[in-house]
Image (cartoon, rainbow, N blue to C red; front, side):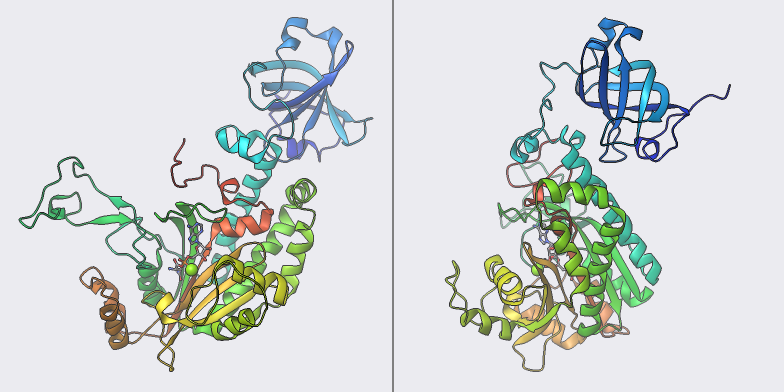
Length: 464
Ligand code: 4AD
Ligand code: MG
Protein backbone atom coordinates (compact mmCIF):
# COMPACT_ATOMS: atom_id res chain seq x y z
CA UNK A 1 0.00 0.00 0.00
CA UNK A 2 1.18 3.51 -0.77
CA UNK A 3 2.27 5.43 2.28
CA UNK A 4 -0.02 8.30 3.19
CA UNK A 5 1.46 11.77 3.59
CA UNK A 6 0.18 14.49 5.84
CA UNK A 7 -2.43 16.76 4.29
CA UNK A 8 -2.90 20.30 5.53
CA UNK A 9 -6.26 21.08 7.09
CA UNK A 10 -7.01 23.69 4.44
CA UNK A 11 -6.75 20.97 1.79
CA UNK A 12 -8.55 18.34 3.84
CA UNK A 13 -11.59 20.57 4.18
CA UNK A 14 -11.81 20.71 0.37
CA UNK A 15 -11.11 17.00 -0.21
CA UNK A 16 -13.57 14.31 -1.24
CA UNK A 17 -14.61 11.94 1.55
CA UNK A 18 -13.79 8.25 1.42
CA UNK A 19 -10.00 8.33 1.60
CA UNK A 20 -7.51 7.61 4.36
CA UNK A 21 -5.65 10.71 5.46
CA UNK A 22 -3.16 12.02 8.00
CA UNK A 23 -3.69 15.34 9.75
CA UNK A 24 -1.25 17.02 12.10
CA UNK A 25 -1.98 19.99 14.29
CA UNK A 26 -2.85 21.46 17.66
CA UNK A 27 -6.00 20.75 19.64
CA UNK A 28 -8.25 23.77 19.89
CA UNK A 29 -11.09 22.16 21.81
CA UNK A 30 -12.31 18.77 22.79
CA UNK A 31 -15.85 17.84 23.74
CA UNK A 32 -18.00 14.72 23.83
CA UNK A 33 -19.27 12.01 26.16
CA UNK A 34 -18.05 8.64 27.35
CA UNK A 35 -18.68 7.02 23.96
CA UNK A 36 -17.41 9.54 21.48
CA UNK A 37 -15.08 12.52 21.53
CA UNK A 38 -14.87 15.41 19.05
CA UNK A 39 -11.53 17.13 18.68
CA UNK A 40 -11.16 20.41 16.78
CA UNK A 41 -7.69 20.32 15.24
CA UNK A 42 -5.97 23.34 13.69
CA UNK A 43 -2.63 23.46 11.87
CA UNK A 44 -2.49 27.15 10.97
CA UNK A 45 -3.15 26.62 7.27
CA UNK A 46 -6.65 28.09 7.69
CA UNK A 47 -8.86 29.67 10.33
CA UNK A 48 -11.06 26.56 10.12
CA UNK A 49 -10.49 23.38 12.14
CA UNK A 50 -10.88 19.79 11.05
CA UNK A 51 -13.10 17.72 13.33
CA UNK A 52 -11.62 14.45 14.54
CA UNK A 53 -14.15 11.90 15.72
CA UNK A 54 -12.78 9.47 18.33
CA UNK A 55 -14.62 6.29 19.25
CA UNK A 56 -13.65 6.08 22.92
CA UNK A 57 -13.88 2.30 23.05
CA UNK A 58 -11.13 1.87 20.42
CA UNK A 59 -8.48 3.94 22.27
CA UNK A 60 -6.55 3.69 25.49
CA UNK A 61 -8.24 5.82 28.13
CA UNK A 62 -4.97 7.10 29.65
CA UNK A 63 -3.83 8.34 26.27
CA UNK A 64 -7.11 10.07 25.52
CA UNK A 65 -6.82 11.99 28.80
CA UNK A 66 -3.70 13.66 27.44
CA UNK A 67 -5.53 15.08 24.44
CA UNK A 68 -6.24 18.51 25.87
CA UNK A 69 -6.35 22.03 24.45
CA UNK A 70 -2.94 22.96 23.04
CA UNK A 71 -1.62 19.40 22.65
CA UNK A 72 -0.07 18.51 19.31
CA UNK A 73 -1.36 15.43 17.49
CA UNK A 74 -0.81 13.28 14.46
CA UNK A 75 -4.10 11.66 13.46
CA UNK A 76 -4.56 8.93 10.91
CA UNK A 77 -8.06 8.10 9.83
CA UNK A 78 -10.77 8.07 7.22
CA UNK A 79 -12.11 11.29 5.81
CA UNK A 80 -15.88 11.06 5.88
CA UNK A 81 -18.84 13.24 5.18
CA UNK A 82 -19.78 15.04 8.38
CA UNK A 83 -23.29 14.65 9.74
CA UNK A 84 -22.84 17.50 12.16
CA UNK A 85 -23.42 21.06 11.13
CA UNK A 86 -20.55 23.46 10.49
CA UNK A 87 -18.28 21.26 8.40
CA UNK A 88 -18.54 19.15 5.25
CA UNK A 89 -15.98 16.53 6.24
CA UNK A 90 -14.43 15.08 9.38
CA UNK A 91 -11.88 12.40 10.22
CA UNK A 92 -12.85 9.11 11.88
CA UNK A 93 -9.67 8.49 13.88
CA UNK A 94 -7.89 5.15 13.51
CA UNK A 95 -4.49 6.00 15.04
CA UNK A 96 -3.51 8.97 17.20
CA UNK A 97 0.05 9.90 18.11
CA UNK A 98 0.55 12.62 20.70
CA UNK A 99 3.58 14.65 19.62
CA UNK A 100 3.43 17.02 22.56
CA UNK A 101 1.15 17.38 25.56
CA UNK A 102 -0.04 20.71 26.97
CA UNK A 103 -0.69 20.65 30.69
CA UNK A 104 -4.18 22.14 31.24
CA UNK A 105 -3.07 23.59 34.57
CA UNK A 106 -0.42 25.79 32.95
CA UNK A 107 -1.24 26.19 29.23
CA UNK A 108 -2.55 29.78 29.13
CA UNK A 109 -4.84 29.54 26.10
CA UNK A 110 -7.64 27.55 27.69
CA UNK A 111 -10.85 29.38 27.14
CA UNK A 112 -12.00 31.41 24.20
CA UNK A 113 -12.29 35.15 24.40
CA UNK A 114 -9.01 36.23 25.99
CA UNK A 115 -8.54 39.99 25.81
CA UNK A 116 -6.06 41.38 23.28
CA UNK A 117 -4.18 42.95 26.21
CA UNK A 118 -3.73 39.56 27.83
CA UNK A 119 -2.65 38.01 24.53
CA UNK A 120 -0.02 40.75 24.13
CA UNK A 121 1.53 39.51 27.36
CA UNK A 122 1.90 36.04 25.82
CA UNK A 123 2.91 37.12 22.32
CA UNK A 124 4.96 33.93 21.96
CA UNK A 125 1.77 31.82 22.10
CA UNK A 126 -0.81 34.14 20.60
CA UNK A 127 -0.21 32.93 17.00
CA UNK A 128 -2.15 29.84 18.11
CA UNK A 129 -5.34 31.85 18.57
CA UNK A 130 -7.88 32.31 15.79
CA UNK A 131 -7.38 36.07 15.82
CA UNK A 132 -3.62 36.04 15.42
CA UNK A 133 -3.69 33.18 12.97
CA UNK A 134 -5.98 35.31 10.83
CA UNK A 135 -3.88 38.47 11.24
CA UNK A 136 -0.60 36.70 10.49
CA UNK A 137 -1.96 34.96 7.39
CA UNK A 138 -3.27 38.30 6.12
CA UNK A 139 0.09 39.89 6.90
CA UNK A 140 1.78 37.24 4.78
CA UNK A 141 -0.71 37.66 1.94
CA UNK A 142 -0.15 41.43 1.92
CA UNK A 143 3.64 41.02 1.83
CA UNK A 144 3.29 38.65 -1.10
CA UNK A 145 0.87 40.97 -2.90
CA UNK A 146 3.26 43.91 -2.48
CA UNK A 147 6.06 42.03 -4.22
CA UNK A 148 3.65 40.82 -6.88
CA UNK A 149 2.33 44.32 -7.56
CA UNK A 150 5.76 45.82 -8.11
CA UNK A 151 7.18 42.83 -9.92
CA UNK A 152 4.28 42.93 -12.39
CA UNK A 153 4.99 46.61 -12.99
CA UNK A 154 8.71 46.05 -13.60
CA UNK A 155 9.97 47.67 -10.40
CA UNK A 156 13.27 46.37 -8.99
CA UNK A 157 13.34 45.27 -5.34
CA UNK A 158 16.30 47.17 -3.91
CA UNK A 159 17.82 46.16 -0.59
CA UNK A 160 18.77 49.30 1.27
CA UNK A 161 20.97 49.18 4.36
CA UNK A 162 19.62 48.99 7.89
CA UNK A 163 22.74 50.50 9.41
CA UNK A 164 23.37 54.02 8.18
CA UNK A 165 25.24 57.22 8.98
CA UNK A 166 22.54 59.57 7.67
CA UNK A 167 19.19 60.68 9.10
CA UNK A 168 16.71 60.59 6.20
CA UNK A 169 13.83 62.30 7.95
CA UNK A 170 16.08 64.67 9.90
CA UNK A 171 13.94 64.16 12.97
CA UNK A 172 16.73 62.81 15.16
CA UNK A 173 14.72 59.76 16.14
CA UNK A 174 17.51 57.27 15.53
CA UNK A 175 18.75 54.30 17.54
CA UNK A 176 22.53 54.40 17.71
CA UNK A 177 24.59 51.41 16.62
CA UNK A 178 27.91 51.14 18.39
CA UNK A 179 30.43 48.68 19.78
CA UNK A 180 32.09 51.29 21.95
CA UNK A 181 32.19 50.61 25.68
CA UNK A 182 29.34 52.79 26.89
CA UNK A 183 30.85 52.97 30.37
CA UNK A 184 34.16 54.22 29.08
CA UNK A 185 33.99 55.49 25.49
CA UNK A 186 37.09 56.95 23.83
CA UNK A 187 37.00 60.74 23.84
CA UNK A 188 38.47 63.49 21.74
CA UNK A 189 40.40 66.38 23.27
CA UNK A 190 37.25 68.48 23.53
CA UNK A 191 35.57 65.71 25.56
CA UNK A 192 33.17 64.54 22.83
CA UNK A 193 33.03 60.85 21.93
CA UNK A 194 35.60 59.74 19.36
CA UNK A 195 33.54 57.75 16.88
CA UNK A 196 36.54 57.25 14.61
CA UNK A 197 37.37 54.42 17.01
CA UNK A 198 33.89 52.89 16.69
CA UNK A 199 33.17 49.81 14.58
CA UNK A 200 32.36 51.74 11.38
CA UNK A 201 34.80 54.57 12.07
CA UNK A 202 31.90 57.00 12.37
CA UNK A 203 28.66 57.51 14.24
CA UNK A 204 25.99 55.13 12.90
CA UNK A 205 22.34 54.33 13.59
CA UNK A 206 19.50 52.05 12.53
CA UNK A 207 17.75 53.52 9.51
CA UNK A 208 14.47 55.43 9.78
CA UNK A 209 13.84 55.03 6.03
CA UNK A 210 15.48 53.50 2.97
CA UNK A 211 14.49 56.43 0.80
CA UNK A 212 17.82 58.17 0.27
CA UNK A 213 19.46 54.99 -0.97
CA UNK A 214 16.24 54.20 -2.83
CA UNK A 215 16.66 57.44 -4.77
CA UNK A 216 20.12 56.28 -5.88
CA UNK A 217 18.46 53.12 -7.20
CA UNK A 218 15.70 55.02 -9.02
CA UNK A 219 18.26 57.23 -10.73
CA UNK A 220 19.84 54.14 -12.24
CA UNK A 221 17.17 51.46 -12.52
CA UNK A 222 14.20 53.74 -13.14
CA UNK A 223 11.67 52.29 -10.73
CA UNK A 224 12.58 50.55 -7.51
CA UNK A 225 10.99 49.68 -4.21
CA UNK A 226 12.30 48.75 -0.81
CA UNK A 227 10.47 46.63 1.72
CA UNK A 228 12.20 46.22 5.02
CA UNK A 229 12.26 47.07 8.70
CA UNK A 230 12.78 50.66 9.80
CA UNK A 231 13.40 51.99 13.28
CA UNK A 232 12.25 55.07 15.12
CA UNK A 233 13.24 56.04 18.62
CA UNK A 234 10.23 58.28 19.04
CA UNK A 235 8.64 58.01 22.43
CA UNK A 236 5.08 57.79 21.09
CA UNK A 237 2.95 55.40 23.04
CA UNK A 238 0.01 55.33 20.65
CA UNK A 239 -1.99 52.57 18.95
CA UNK A 240 -0.37 53.61 15.64
CA UNK A 241 3.36 53.81 16.46
CA UNK A 242 6.02 51.13 16.70
CA UNK A 243 9.73 51.57 17.33
CA UNK A 244 10.41 48.85 14.74
CA UNK A 245 8.05 48.75 11.79
CA UNK A 246 8.15 47.63 8.17
CA UNK A 247 7.95 50.11 5.36
CA UNK A 248 7.44 49.81 1.62
CA UNK A 249 9.13 52.62 -0.29
CA UNK A 250 8.78 52.86 -4.06
CA UNK A 251 10.94 55.48 -5.78
CA UNK A 252 10.46 56.38 -9.43
CA UNK A 253 12.48 58.41 -11.92
CA UNK A 254 10.42 60.72 -14.16
CA UNK A 255 7.41 60.69 -11.82
CA UNK A 256 5.95 64.04 -10.81
CA UNK A 257 3.69 64.45 -7.80
CA UNK A 258 0.51 63.60 -9.77
CA UNK A 259 2.06 60.32 -10.99
CA UNK A 260 3.11 59.59 -7.43
CA UNK A 261 -0.43 60.12 -6.13
CA UNK A 262 -1.87 57.90 -8.84
CA UNK A 263 0.55 55.10 -8.00
CA UNK A 264 -0.16 55.38 -4.27
CA UNK A 265 -3.92 55.18 -4.79
CA UNK A 266 -3.68 52.30 -7.26
CA UNK A 267 -1.27 50.42 -4.99
CA UNK A 268 -3.46 50.58 -1.87
CA UNK A 269 -6.58 49.64 -3.80
CA UNK A 270 -4.75 46.67 -5.33
CA UNK A 271 -3.68 45.46 -1.89
CA UNK A 272 -7.13 45.81 -0.35
CA UNK A 273 -8.68 44.03 -3.32
CA UNK A 274 -6.07 41.28 -3.06
CA UNK A 275 -7.06 40.75 0.57
CA UNK A 276 -10.75 40.58 -0.35
CA UNK A 277 -10.02 38.11 -3.15
CA UNK A 278 -7.61 35.87 -1.22
CA UNK A 279 -8.21 36.17 2.53
CA UNK A 280 -11.99 36.05 2.84
CA UNK A 281 -12.17 33.36 5.56
CA UNK A 282 -9.86 35.35 7.81
CA UNK A 283 -11.48 38.70 7.01
CA UNK A 284 -14.93 37.28 7.66
CA UNK A 285 -13.76 36.03 11.06
CA UNK A 286 -12.30 39.43 11.98
CA UNK A 287 -15.43 41.14 10.69
CA UNK A 288 -17.65 38.94 12.88
CA UNK A 289 -15.47 39.10 15.99
CA UNK A 290 -14.11 42.65 16.11
CA UNK A 291 -15.45 45.04 13.56
CA UNK A 292 -18.81 44.51 11.89
CA UNK A 293 -18.06 47.19 9.29
CA UNK A 294 -14.69 45.84 8.21
CA UNK A 295 -15.75 44.15 4.98
CA UNK A 296 -17.98 47.04 3.96
CA UNK A 297 -15.13 49.50 4.60
CA UNK A 298 -12.66 47.46 2.57
CA UNK A 299 -15.03 47.12 -0.36
CA UNK A 300 -15.82 50.80 -0.29
CA UNK A 301 -12.15 51.83 -0.45
CA UNK A 302 -11.59 49.71 -3.55
CA UNK A 303 -14.43 51.50 -5.29
CA UNK A 304 -14.05 55.14 -4.25
CA UNK A 305 -11.83 57.81 -5.65
CA UNK A 306 -9.56 59.36 -3.05
CA UNK A 307 -10.05 63.08 -2.42
CA UNK A 308 -7.14 65.31 -3.44
CA UNK A 309 -6.74 68.28 -1.23
CA UNK A 310 -4.01 70.82 -0.54
CA UNK A 311 -2.87 71.42 3.01
CA UNK A 312 -4.09 75.02 2.74
CA UNK A 313 -7.60 73.89 1.74
CA UNK A 314 -7.54 71.27 4.49
CA UNK A 315 -6.67 73.87 7.14
CA UNK A 316 -9.51 76.07 5.92
CA UNK A 317 -12.00 73.20 6.27
CA UNK A 318 -10.75 72.40 9.76
CA UNK A 319 -10.87 76.04 10.84
CA UNK A 320 -14.44 76.36 9.62
CA UNK A 321 -15.56 73.02 11.02
CA UNK A 322 -16.76 74.35 14.35
CA UNK A 323 -15.14 71.28 15.87
CA UNK A 324 -13.27 71.56 19.18
CA UNK A 325 -9.87 69.91 18.62
CA UNK A 326 -7.43 69.04 21.36
CA UNK A 327 -4.67 70.63 19.24
CA UNK A 328 -5.86 73.94 17.71
CA UNK A 329 -5.38 74.36 13.96
CA UNK A 330 -3.96 77.24 11.96
CA UNK A 331 -1.86 77.43 8.79
CA UNK A 332 1.62 76.12 9.56
CA UNK A 333 0.82 73.54 12.23
CA UNK A 334 1.56 69.87 11.71
CA UNK A 335 -1.73 67.99 11.45
CA UNK A 336 -2.58 65.65 14.31
CA UNK A 337 -4.36 62.37 13.92
CA UNK A 338 -7.63 63.98 15.16
CA UNK A 339 -7.48 66.53 12.31
CA UNK A 340 -6.70 63.92 9.68
CA UNK A 341 -9.51 61.73 10.89
CA UNK A 342 -11.98 64.61 10.95
CA UNK A 343 -11.30 65.29 7.26
CA UNK A 344 -11.42 61.65 6.24
CA UNK A 345 -14.22 60.31 8.43
CA UNK A 346 -16.50 63.28 9.02
CA UNK A 347 -15.97 65.81 6.25
CA UNK A 348 -15.34 63.69 3.13
CA UNK A 349 -16.17 60.16 4.22
CA UNK A 350 -13.37 58.69 2.11
CA UNK A 351 -9.57 58.60 1.92
CA UNK A 352 -7.78 61.89 1.29
CA UNK A 353 -4.46 62.63 -0.38
CA UNK A 354 -3.19 65.87 1.08
CA UNK A 355 -0.48 67.81 -0.73
CA UNK A 356 1.57 71.00 -0.66
CA UNK A 357 2.54 71.27 2.98
CA UNK A 358 4.46 74.15 4.58
CA UNK A 359 8.14 73.35 4.10
CA UNK A 360 8.83 73.84 7.81
CA UNK A 361 6.91 70.71 8.79
CA UNK A 362 8.34 68.41 6.12
CA UNK A 363 11.71 66.78 5.41
CA UNK A 364 14.58 68.49 3.57
CA UNK A 365 14.33 66.49 0.32
CA UNK A 366 10.85 67.58 -0.79
CA UNK A 367 10.50 69.69 -3.94
CA UNK A 368 9.90 73.37 -3.23
CA UNK A 369 6.84 74.89 -4.90
CA UNK A 370 6.98 78.21 -6.78
CA UNK A 371 5.47 80.03 -3.80
CA UNK A 372 8.70 79.35 -1.89
CA UNK A 373 6.59 78.40 1.16
CA UNK A 374 5.17 74.97 0.43
CA UNK A 375 6.63 71.67 -0.76
CA UNK A 376 5.28 68.91 -2.98
CA UNK A 377 4.73 66.47 -0.17
CA UNK A 378 1.77 64.13 -0.11
CA UNK A 379 0.22 62.19 2.74
CA UNK A 380 -2.49 59.60 2.18
CA UNK A 381 -4.98 59.79 5.05
CA UNK A 382 -7.23 56.85 5.88
CA UNK A 383 -10.31 56.27 8.01
CA UNK A 384 -9.51 55.05 11.55
CA UNK A 385 -5.75 55.34 10.87
CA UNK A 386 -4.89 58.86 9.81
CA UNK A 387 -1.60 58.90 7.87
CA UNK A 388 -0.96 55.61 6.09
CA UNK A 389 1.45 56.91 3.42
CA UNK A 390 3.94 59.79 3.41
CA UNK A 391 5.76 60.79 0.27
CA UNK A 392 6.71 63.57 -2.13
CA UNK A 393 8.18 64.67 -5.36
CA UNK A 394 11.88 65.14 -4.60
CA UNK A 395 13.86 68.33 -5.01
CA UNK A 396 15.88 67.66 -8.13
CA UNK A 397 17.81 70.93 -8.23
CA UNK A 398 21.26 70.71 -6.61
CA UNK A 399 21.27 74.41 -5.68
CA UNK A 400 17.87 74.34 -4.00
CA UNK A 401 18.66 71.15 -2.13
CA UNK A 402 22.00 72.51 -0.92
CA UNK A 403 20.30 75.69 0.23
CA UNK A 404 17.70 73.71 2.17
CA UNK A 405 20.29 71.53 3.87
CA UNK A 406 22.15 74.67 4.93
CA UNK A 407 18.97 76.41 6.07
CA UNK A 408 18.12 73.46 8.31
CA UNK A 409 21.66 73.29 9.71
CA UNK A 410 21.98 69.64 8.64
CA UNK A 411 25.33 67.88 8.50
CA UNK A 412 26.32 67.88 4.86
CA UNK A 413 29.31 65.56 5.16
CA UNK A 414 27.04 62.52 5.61
CA UNK A 415 25.01 63.47 2.50
CA UNK A 416 27.59 64.17 -0.24
CA UNK A 417 26.88 60.80 -1.85
CA UNK A 418 23.17 61.69 -1.94
CA UNK A 419 23.87 65.06 -3.55
CA UNK A 420 25.66 63.24 -6.38
CA UNK A 421 22.23 62.16 -7.70
CA UNK A 422 21.53 65.87 -8.30
CA UNK A 423 25.08 66.60 -9.48
CA UNK A 424 25.14 63.93 -12.19
CA UNK A 425 22.14 63.37 -14.43
CA UNK A 426 19.49 64.69 -12.06
CA UNK A 427 15.86 64.12 -13.06
CA UNK A 428 12.40 64.76 -11.71
CA UNK A 429 11.54 61.85 -9.43
CA UNK A 430 9.13 60.92 -6.67
CA UNK A 431 8.39 58.27 -4.10
CA UNK A 432 6.52 57.42 -0.96
CA UNK A 433 6.56 55.20 2.10
CA UNK A 434 3.66 52.97 3.11
CA UNK A 435 3.76 51.85 6.73
CA UNK A 436 3.14 48.10 6.48
CA UNK A 437 1.55 47.82 9.92
CA UNK A 438 -0.67 50.86 9.27
CA UNK A 439 -1.90 49.09 6.13
CA UNK A 440 -2.54 45.99 8.21
CA UNK A 441 -4.49 47.98 10.79
CA UNK A 442 -6.77 49.05 7.99
CA UNK A 443 -7.07 45.67 6.31
CA UNK A 444 -7.61 43.65 9.50
CA UNK A 445 -9.67 46.24 11.35
CA UNK A 446 -7.53 45.72 14.46
CA UNK A 447 -7.37 48.79 16.67
CA UNK A 448 -3.82 48.54 17.99
CA UNK A 449 -0.64 48.34 15.91
CA UNK A 450 0.85 45.96 18.51
CA UNK A 451 -1.64 43.36 17.31
CA UNK A 452 -0.65 43.29 13.63
CA UNK A 453 3.06 42.45 14.04
CA UNK A 454 4.23 39.18 15.61
CA UNK A 455 6.63 40.70 18.16
CA UNK A 456 6.00 44.41 18.71
CA UNK A 457 8.76 46.79 19.73
CA UNK A 458 7.49 49.81 21.64
CA UNK A 459 8.94 52.06 24.35
CA UNK A 460 9.91 49.91 27.36
CA UNK A 461 9.02 46.70 25.55
CA UNK A 462 11.39 44.41 23.67
CA UNK A 463 10.23 40.99 24.87
CA UNK A 464 11.11 37.83 22.91
O1 4AD B 1 5.97 59.82 6.72
P1 4AD B 1 7.23 59.02 6.93
O2 4AD B 1 8.09 59.42 8.08
O3 4AD B 1 8.01 59.12 5.56
C1 4AD B 1 9.25 58.60 5.29
O4 4AD B 1 9.93 57.97 6.03
C2 4AD B 1 9.67 58.82 3.86
N1 4AD B 1 11.13 58.70 3.79
C3 4AD B 1 8.97 57.83 2.98
C4 4AD B 1 9.30 58.02 1.51
O5 4AD B 1 8.92 59.02 0.94
N2 4AD B 1 10.00 57.07 0.93
O6 4AD B 1 6.85 57.48 7.10
C5 4AD B 1 6.16 56.80 6.08
C6 4AD B 1 5.03 55.96 6.66
C7 4AD B 1 3.98 56.75 7.41
O7 4AD B 1 3.03 57.30 6.53
C8 4AD B 1 3.39 55.68 8.30
O8 4AD B 1 2.48 54.88 7.57
C9 4AD B 1 4.59 54.82 8.62
O9 4AD B 1 5.56 55.06 7.61
N3 4AD B 1 5.17 55.14 9.93
C10 4AD B 1 5.05 54.37 11.02
N4 4AD B 1 4.41 53.19 11.22
C11 4AD B 1 4.49 52.65 12.46
N5 4AD B 1 5.14 53.19 13.48
C12 4AD B 1 5.81 54.37 13.34
N6 4AD B 1 6.50 54.89 14.37
C13 4AD B 1 5.77 55.01 12.06
N7 4AD B 1 6.31 56.15 11.56
C14 4AD B 1 5.94 56.21 10.27
MG1 MG C 1 4.89 61.32 7.52
